[in-house]
Picture: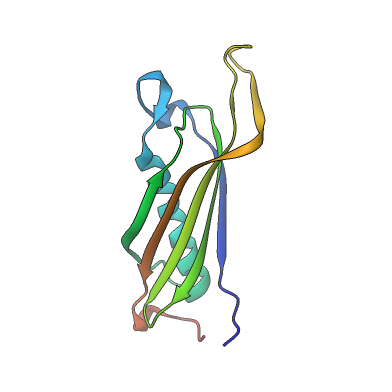
Length: 133
């Protein structure tokens, strides 16, 4: 089988409502929420069903995120079992606020910063797999 496995992508700005700690720091759980959206999209693309996020195999938080940051999150299915789909994820900071210049100053980074890396598995039961592979 030489089927191309799906990928998913999200770009978004983290707002003040995403800040959870002092200094406008965003909790790591926000990145996991975004990864949850990616894995749902991957299951929908591959199986026509949202699936159920079964487990994280690995999660690494590598750099902080703050309210005002722009991120890009990427996910891809890397292997497929009978009902399981193993996926890799990355979250990158691509821009952010620059309050030292003004309240509304912002800019994109010359080099994105990897803030989170994860591996997780979703499960789509056989009766819910709508696409033949």
